[in-house]
Length: 97
Length: 524
Image (cartoon, rainbow over all chains, first blue to last red; front, side, top):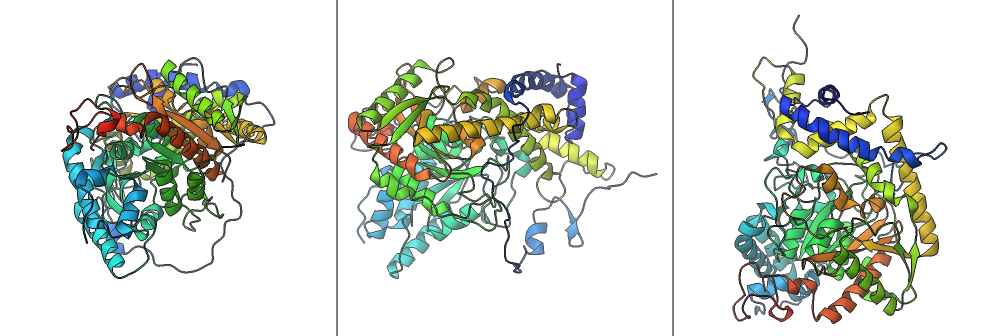
């Protein structure tokens, strides 16, 4: 089942990537090639084989409940694209209506 | 204190030799740092290994080591030794870009655990090295800031993603480098540059402050010109870190002792049948085969071992790693740090986010984010991501079965030698094949190392031999690597790198260019 240009446009939207028309066409061919190649995993992965999420599993990782200082506000805000009144300034997050 | 080394001699020394000379007062850490900074100035126009050089910071760190020595304080085994740090680990006094426009100029407010441990050990950080954007690639061509070049042949790639660190160590700009390995990004650049590259056991080295690509795979580790140097660096950066919840709380395997032992007598070595054959360069297979014969002549018991699911490692990896990347890279949202474009007062946060990510990420990062988004979408999750996770289990079981028969496994590190810059740049599947042999150990989380085993006759470029060891069996691969290195250097009459062409003409007093082992090769 080939990956269509429309599907790539959908993936780009989900991925928050404002791609150009040229990029969409270019990536459609490449993603189709990659997905056909990686689909080989379906040849061997049968029922009953447990999925593995982590290389070296560690369980019940706890730490002592000790306070440690956080980063200074200024150190963090100094790297922000925009700040206002000691906070991150962001574009509007709600649609006007 | 009398200085014993000329600058060219200092840059040609190993980390172990430099540390001993500094501790013994034969040379100061400042002289060592200066020699390497001068070397960087001389060869960077050709090699482009660094994205940022911190001359003042390096000299200050070197001065501090000299002062501690003068005060009679004990020094660690790498105190005063310069190092090239991959630009994916945070540094509170240097920018951290991950080779991406989206983080251009970002100055992290904190040090990664690896960075902190290096500083505490008195290691002198020379700067930050180039890399494929967010560690996605095998050539450094995906860096937003231009590729690094292989010092053996400047028209070829130094491997990747840790290609800046491998190029820096190969070009004698630093005796040590730090890389990160997610699918082979330390071992593959090590192999194609003719140096040693090590992926420790997953969780053996901390990920705190390592900008995440694929969290279940990312592993920092050493690059060096000798196996012993790699082991010294391995011990300095390793050990449990409460700041990384996947850090393994177990003693660091005795890798330095193993590198000094350098003995394979009685060791059972398995040659992986599946990592050979079609698609492998003849010269790579020839040098690999000779190295295996050499190990056998040193007393190892060599048998062939089948790991039938290894051929499915590459497809599984290119589902798992992009899936994790699509989630991890969601943090680059143009809100709290990094690039923001299109914030003109009319556009919404969503629009600004999408415009920024389109402008700030390169093609390979976009491909992988979309690939991961696809593999994780409802309707495709079970067929792709779920199946890949099952394949991961099968690969782990192959390793478990193999390690019941043998102590370590070996294979070529890469199917081919270094390819030409541009050759695979817009052909993702061809690029992905560079990691064919290294990916299984990333998926299983075990330890693996690449050590040089000669030059391919058809192109005169370095070939690497990979040694894979069980989880937390890192010391075993150092035994094999060091034994092979010693036997091969005896055969070659010196290190492999001595056969590389000089980058900037012969050093004063040496023979004309044209490069025999006797006149020292690069930078001597």
